[in-house]
Image 1 (cartoon, rainbow, N blue to C red):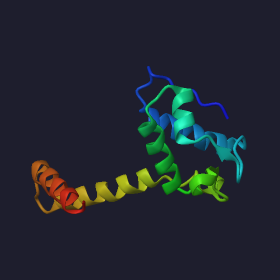
Image 2: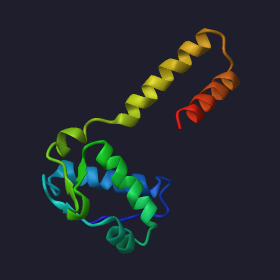
Image 3: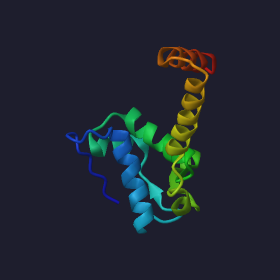
Image 4: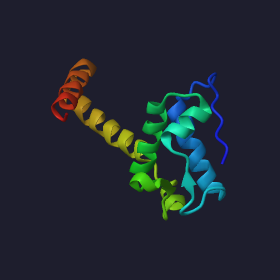
Length: 125
């Protein structure tokens, strides 16, 4: 698998990584059990910050596209192809959109909604 980063693209680098890994899974280039480079190795190869690669790997693991096995490495998840079709960001956005619609129906202003959201985010840490 070859990953190419376009620094002129408006898409954040970690999203470019995620999209390319998912694309390689969907096209069959990456299959179940295939080993991925370590975070450090991939960051060095791409010339990007290790935290950027770590963020992409964390999100791919959350979505069950990859699985980290400690010191043994990071591998393509057995259900990766099916899981590529699930977009948790879209699901989250739909939940938030519905909540905003409901809050506006109650008469809350956008400012009040932002303050409420910010307050809840602080509480959940």
